Image (cartoon, rainbow, N blue to C red; front, side):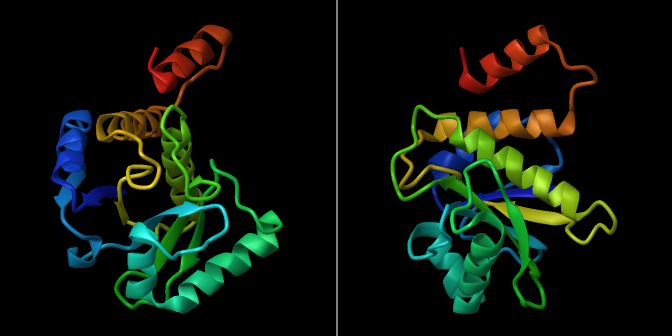
Length: 194
C-alpha cells in the first residue's frame, strides 16, 4: 500500500517530511487532495457522527457528492448505534470511477480541540488497520490519501500530529512479535511522547 499524506498547509507538509523521512513509500503532497490524479481511497478526518460539513470533510463531500455522507451516516447508524468511536475506521464505496473508496476515520466525537490526546495516533492506527482488513482477500486499495489528522479544528500542533501519525505507521509496518508489560509500556511511552 502506498500512503500519500496531502495537505494545503506547507508547515504540516514539512512536519511530515521530517517525521516520515525514512519511509520511501510515503509521499508528501503539498496541496489539495482533489489535485491528486491517482488514488484508491481517501481518508476522512471525521467526527463520530459522519457530519461532513466543515474542513476536509466538506471538501470530500463536495468532491464525491452528498450521497457519500448519507452512506457514511447509514453505516454509523447500522454498525455503531449512531456514534462511531474514535479509534475505529471503516471503508465505504464512493461510486467514483477513479477513487472508489473512503476510509471514515473519526479523530473526535464532535468538532473540538483534541490537543494533549492520542486521538491522532488512534485514528491513524484504525485507518491503517481498516485498509489492511479490507484488503485481506483482495487488494483493492493500493493508494491511500490521508490529510492532516486533528490539525484544523482539533488544534493539534503540526509536529505533534506528524509524530503521532508516524508512530502509528511505524507500528503498523513493524508489529510486535510478542506482547509483554515492558513492550506495552514502551509502546505507550512512545505514543504519549514521554
